[in-house]
Image (cartoon, rainbow, N blue to C red; front, side, top):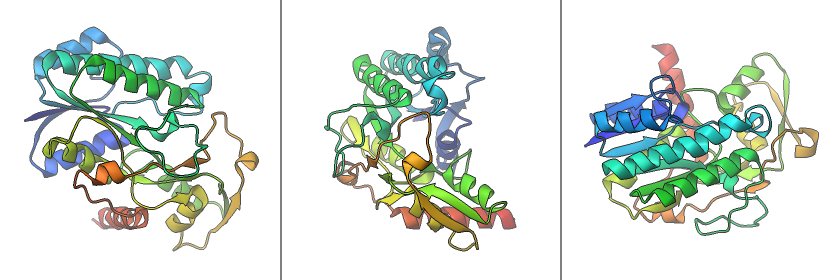
Length: 284
């Protein structure tokens, strides 16, 4: 079985490569310079050459605030047009597709967990583009999984954990939003689930995947910095304005994912395992 990964330089793309290497699985990975997914001819040519059995579509435009203005066009080109090109190629060449989406397809007004069949209503440009990308996958007719995730952190790339650690090096006190509720997701957990779907031949469709447990950004930050002397103080979203709307309640149900037989770590355990791994790497 041969895998093709898009978004090779992203935090998930690099995690997927690490996982597939560990499992001694055959794969090819393309970053945006090696394969411009917005170029339909280039995408079809890559699929023609590589003949993948499985595609992990991790390429995405993820600058949520910039997507509201100067990045609006690129957001749509990558997350919609690019995803359509990858999905259509997967259909044409008979490859199974695992595409990654976001909790931002929801408006954040539900009081309990969002399930896969809940009505979608994205409230920012990024969420609207990712939803249109989901529809492109579905409409392609490819054998596909759409995995919605949230609050992603991991070893590679930029993410909330690294941001908090960097700020803690130069600030004795940090203020973090405490009125947005969600589930953090370790890239390792997400990558393992994507491979798990293929391995167990789960039913195609939409799945929600993050780590177990819910938290706010404030409590997430406190956990990240619990072994430091930095003070972490809560603020409201109104006190920390951002261009793009963020859902207030962004908790997605994990029942469907767990029903496939996949065991999901609690986010605190995932964070601890991630940080221990970082420390081991630093010591080498």
